[in-house]
Length: 226
Image (cartoon, rainbow, N blue to C red; front, side, top):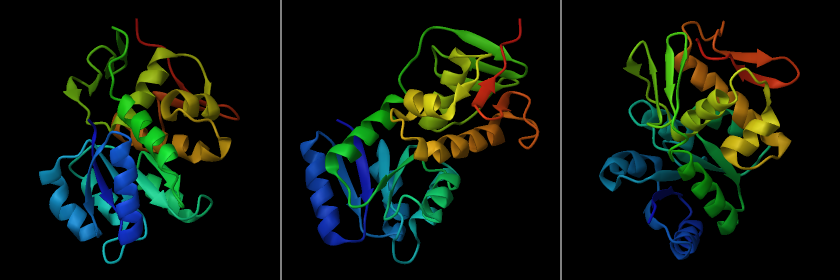
């Protein structure tokens, strides 16, 4: 049973979502503020955090940033608007996905399960890209022999790029493969995740040599070294 931490300051929404997600088969702990979430998430040890953006005091962005300093567990943001700066800031803070309020529990449940599937094992294969080693069987990525800590979404993204090495994948293809939805308006999910991934795997993220941008298309991981 997946364990969730739901962070929402509105008591009515928090109770309704907790009940709905419990009925969907999740174990749900709650927090009413960013401070409470930061104080308790390590003891709760959730598989995933559902995090409201607009929290009093420490907001959802800051909660996300602080958790990302030490943890790679998945985070889904709850945001009031899909087309404003909140989404971009949230993704740059390290969130894996977002859902727009008012939240439909079935949609949220589907997004949660999609994120959690990203850590599942892939086909048995090891590929080397310069100093980067991608082991799809062990679901690990290392650089010069040192493991790289990746969120489940970052890990799934590099696995899909590796599986299609040498092939340019569009943002819409990556949305389907990694996030399991393909609304093109969500392409910022891809761009933000690529940016975070480059920061971890590239020597000079601003001048990537591994994950290339294919102008007008999307992204490509160059073929593995022979």
